[in-house]
Image 1 (cartoon, helix red, strand yellow):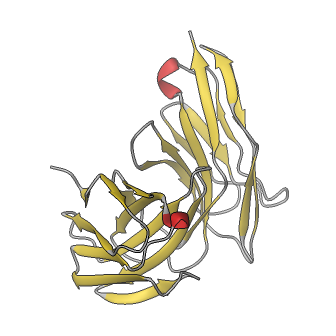
Image 2 (cartoon, each protein chain N blue to C red; image 1 turned 90 degrees about the vertical axis):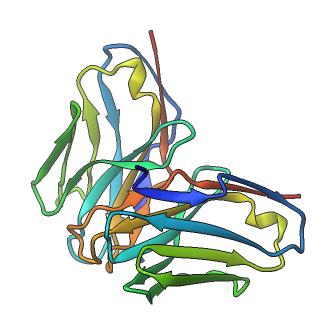
Length: 111
Length: 114
């Protein structure tokens, strides 16, 4: 079945460091891909998405490119802030708008 | 105004009890979902409803029964609660079932079964 694999966390960075969180997927066809973010004590918020191969999703300085040749959707940000500390989830649409999530990667950014 | 709201936010109960979690969305969306997040933060869909009709029913024990009285509400009733049911339950909604429709999540209900 469809699945998403994310790099294990936690990821600990200093402010202004470069961030990469790896995400790969297994799916039939070419599903839409998403990154969601969960801040402490809150629900999930959509961070960015890409609906077809080579699409780049971007929001709030975060970017991810849909790479069908490597079945990847890695999340990147050039300069993280303390306020980016959260758990990040990679997900794919498994049909009928059913989201299939990766295990989540906790990011901690310190001053 | 909160787009997707859940009540209660916290629920502590004993094994064997029956409890309900309520979800309401004021976005005018047609589709609603329940997700379960376990202690390791792993998220998995449980159910989805579109216009009050059950669409997705993942492998969930029969003790879990969703009910959608109207398009704006999707409640989750759990019978005979077990320790393993302890988790955070998230409700979500989207305009429709197509892939282009973003899902909006509620704040979650933390269920603790003792």
